[in-house]
Length: 312
Image (cartoon, rainbow, N blue to C red; front, side):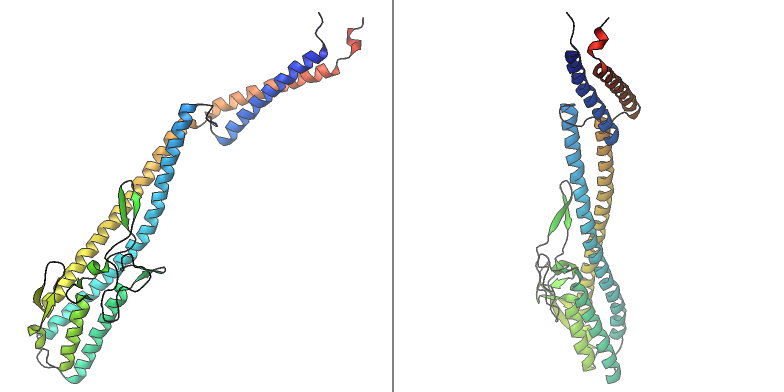
């Protein structure tokens, strides 16, 4: 029985689709660099790759959180460091005044202006902002945490965001702790002490600096303290929380390095599962191309056959 040219042509068209599909597949592998392009290629490897990608994307989101957190931590640490450095200078002036008896009215005016400017500067630092958010008001980020007389109006509750699996860090801070607010008065203790110092200096009798006392509660109960002792207690508290900020900065820096390293390892694992072997893929592509070209030539020959080919 003679096989008709139409039947031969149909068979060749069927193989044309097959060879064309094979060539398209190899082209896609080379262009994407991947050997696993769909779940059906390798269900197990595809599922593993998907899990690795999701984990990697999660770590990258955490690193974005770290970048945001760092901007808040850096600003908070800078503000508190400026406050501590300024107050350490004030302490020197304070001790000098303790060794002075009576001062002239002109000198008193100069000193009171100095202490008042420091007092205002500390309140300004306590009201530091990042963008439109106040740093030291806890979750109350839209209103100044400290009033003009140093009274704390912020929240003691802080907001945190995840920076690593199971680890969170601050985006705002409880100013009651960081600026050593005296719970007995509700004011930043250094501001309260400076207000008393200004009053004494303007009175001209600086001997009161050594005798006057103030009621202090920094979370360990009320006690009566001399002005310098109260000042030192507040400064010590602020230095303690500055160190806490430094520790938090170190933690998020280390976590970012750790997250980036983990993302790199996850991408390497994913690459081993799904990446194409380029030399092998190129060889397979060339084979598919040659086979397809041969098929096209065969189809062309079939199309040129006519009834005259069978006449003798």
